[in-house]
Image (cartoon, rainbow, N blue to C red; front, side, top):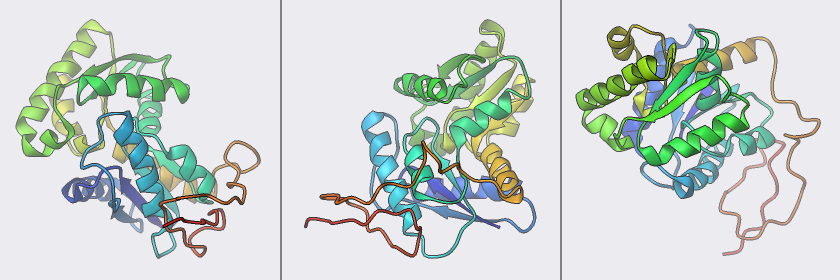
Length: 255
């Protein structure tokens, strides 16, 4: 089984960290391939960057040259999962939905601890769209920028723990969800400090993706996520390869 784990930003070191976390939880025989978009922002912390990442991730995935069995979109609250589901015939798992749904098996209410405060409304909206908001006690910001998570890992843990403890005490959360792909691998440290289950979205997404592949299940194509209709698309920035997916539209790119 081969699973593509797509970073939503262009920071290669973050792709490496996300892929390492995915490999640490993957079952024997599962190959994890981390991919980095060829264009886009070095971190995603707002709507513009998130929509840009959606295009960049689709570009990276549909142009991956080898066969694969599932895709993980490794950005918490980012846009684009729906587009990938239209383009591909394999399961697509978003870490936002994977983490939140996993948390619901572990406690009555969960809280998300993310990066900057400006990301909070985006995550709240994505959870609502996915139907996962009713059991979300809160979405809290650690105050750490995405790239600071790698630059200052000790400070990041302290900031996340502080908000996680407040979520448990003040918001009555029983489970903590790490609300950024860049937090991959920090779950055990935070679990030890807070004394409640802590869900890492990358790890949750890997186990869900593996399960879907083993069960022979993928996205329904009868309506919402049917393949894009053949159309002339002007200025389409993706270099679509017909061999990558039968669902890929034919692009008529203006140079």
